[in-house]
Image 1 (cartoon, rainbow, N blue to C red):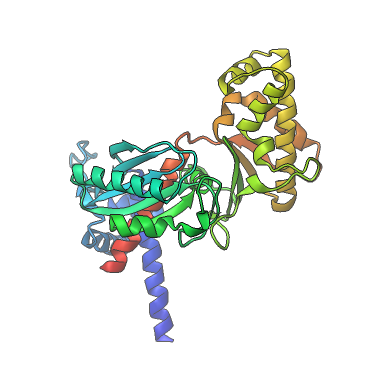
Image 2: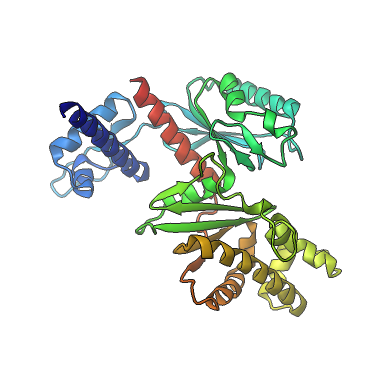
Length: 373
């Protein structure tokens, strides 16, 4: 009985440490401010913060403003100088290096390729290693690799169009072996939802679907405050699902690429920006094509919602350039189904994928530091 009690106390301490760190990620706070927010005693909060100081995860800071009795209150903040975090985006071809508090320090553009093979990947890794050496970055705390495709939790691929012989590639192992830091490989859409959910100021809804419409069609789900990645890590990869009417996959039906192709089939070669401008100004032919496209998207959303029944659908990706008029068509289509009671909104965070990647990288670093202590 005593043994179980010890485990419970340890688990509670870990949760409270996480809660304190989450608060300090937003802004510096005093112990009293955090104790009030978390409904903990000052003694309990002081013990938690003392442990986090021992890990060097947080430090004291003295803000310039004085309180009502003329003193500068001591606040705590994330230790920005603890080390560096690297985000590698294989879809948008860049490396970004941040300090531990989230300020970007360095950026490197990676070679653009249509399909990655082992040679391309090794070349990217060499460029990254040389760059980190040039910038004298030795204390790399964690790395997140952003990619598309169906990814196992161990960093290997189940399926990915962007990678030649994808089943033989394990990105996590490749980067860990070369960068000597803990690495996680994550789907780009899941990271986008992590950011949106993590940064929500109001009460988090119990259930959310994010539909990401860009070069392809992706999806991510959240239930009960957590993003659900699936048993093997690729939940939400809907682009390969076949439409039962046309027999074509959703990537070819509801992506931005599919929208542009609709205009090409009608004899108009237009960019997404031109389509968006014409739609917003009410050009008849453009409105007609976008309306039909929105109905395609609506059908896909309805199919998802009739299974998942979520409170909110967030639409993300470059499709957002179509504006609120595009959402209104979707809302009207959904309103015709008596079983659906769902809000349809645009995602608020324009840099959601990179922000989600940083949050997970920071958590990975924290977990590793505490485990080693």
